[in-house]
Length: 117
Image 1: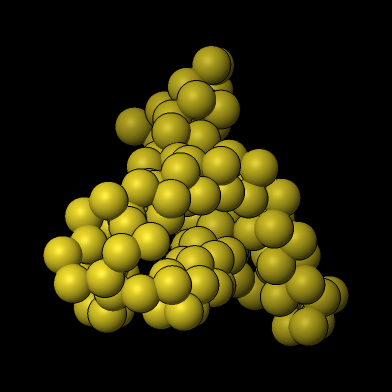
Image 2: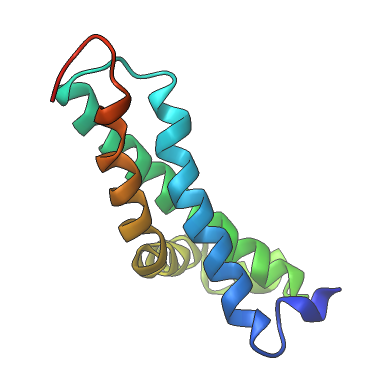
């Protein structure tokens, strides 16, 4: 089962689809909490971006751990170095989830009942 994420074409496609799906889902879930309006929509977009950055970081950390790399091995270079490495990977993963997230956020105003765009 661990080879599912580490070998072949699924090693790229499955994680990419997972991140894209989460990028679509996060704004939809945040829209249940945030009020309607333009300013809350921008705040929602900012919060969704931060959440997705953290999700990307955790996703890559999970992939590292899944492949058998221990936390002790990861932190040998220092905690700040590890955090920066996974922050960079999370930012790079924005190439996968950001376009989907933007489309998801852009579709939210059509469901507004109280406010208009």
